Length: 123
Image: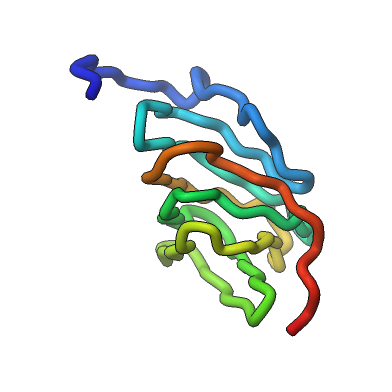
């Protein structure tokens, strides 16, 4: 457990150590058990397939819309909406809007935060 209290300014966010094609992630907080930051997908762009290992993920869409595709379906979130991505759930994000989107993510778990994978077979 850390006892350091910190303010992380937006211009001090760190680069994603394991990027996924098509998305831009910036990490603000990386402590044992928790990773938090921002994610953005450009208009009309679709990310690569990936999952977040043992991490449960919460995503809050701040700007635009975010489509989350899973092998068995998809959901679309708009500004103000939250998405829960269960640990191990293979998915990819896209931006169906005409402007870049922006979301905040928080992940709780251990081990690799992002695992890029090949496209899963369709059910």
